[in-house]
Length: 269
Ligand code: SAM
Image (tube, rainbow, N blue to C red):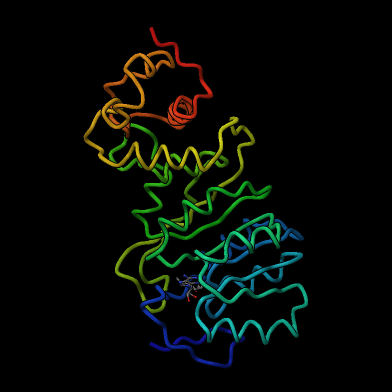
């Protein structure tokens, strides 16, 4: 399906394999762009033909875009002649994100994310402590998992990881008709704002713990870490070892991570 965007002379065919569903809802575009304060710097993941990009470019001091599709990377590279506050990174975001963030040092990350990689991409995104935050579009079910609180059936690893540096909040939910071509699912825009209260615990260690802890959702937390931590270890940090992973909140996961790292002293008899 072709897609024409205001200000863009070319028509691009959406590539399903790259999760291309182009945003056409003006309300959604405004909501995303206006969440970024004027004059700050940002990275946009997957600009495509630029529904969000054009509005963001009008606000920010500098924008770096990361795009895998050769056609869009080339299109935006040509635009750097007009926009001298635009940089283009042509590549797979999962491979280039780390170096792009190191180089650009953005205040914000924004994007209508390709849904097929949104899980691993979010686990990577959540490792960056940005001063501004992130405005990210997800398939609705993934967005619901990210904002879910402990105790909920859909609470999982991503719900924990995003809370290391950020407080997640749903901004808007969008129907399939907000995109061209329309996806089969609803979408959700999630805002991640820094809470400034991150404990002294390395993100990579938290991620390893969460991955292992949620490997079998029906097992008790004691059984997930059997052989490594005792029942008493859990009790010493006020965690009931019989709880299931989805019953533990972010602070509990940090405690388990620190127990595993030996940062919290374990008193064995
Ligand atoms: N931002 C545009 C919009 O809102 O209309 C396009 C969003 S579309 C859902 C996802 C975009 O991410 C596409 O431009 C696609 O080419 C790009 N993309 C898909 N996989 C990618 C990857 N692994 N790395 C970088 N960009 C990717």
